[in-house]
Length: 252
Image (cartoon, rainbow, N blue to C red; front, side, top):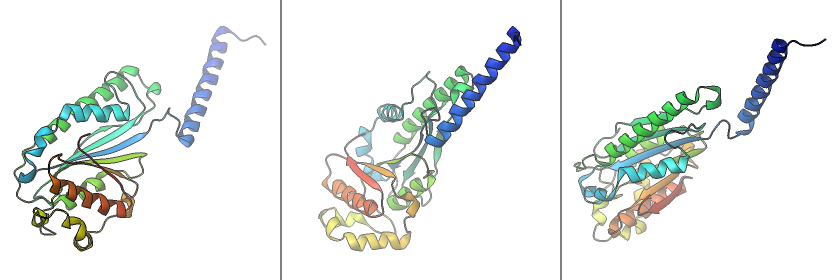
């Protein structure tokens, strides 16, 4: 039987739709790039007075550009990638306010291209603005609840995401009711000697959840302060013992 042009077109359309459904189903099982990876990032800054001078070297546009490049997100370009960036701070607050910018993971080819570009641009611009707002936040607090702030940041993430990272910008000197690292200003190397004692104080105040294991932490450390570097080494050891992946850098 000879098919009419209309019937032939309908048949080919049906075959094409079935192939597309098959590709999507396979990509869901195998994490094909069609679906896109998911990224969960936290930006966390110290707003204690002792960090005010050091934070002047942080430039929001540069940090944001590096994050977007790392995730493969560009303005005016559709992507299947999903991303959430959380923005918070560490100071006198035990439970700091957290804001976020979010881009839903999506197979953009199933939707109008311009709609996905609009979503990408909205995320790009919002996350850029929030990065700059965070880095320009005044650092006036006398107290720095670094430990509670970092745990609060980690708790925001979806820990099933393929890529999880918290970027911390601080002088790393906890100054709270939990412990006072300012006592080590004259002998910063003792932060390593007294490690077990200090660790026990932190864990006694609040344990670390096992779901944080495998998450990466980047500690951005002021270049010229030995005590900050020794304190950052303390936190690196502490979080690595709990299964996180930690590195110390002068910049991002």
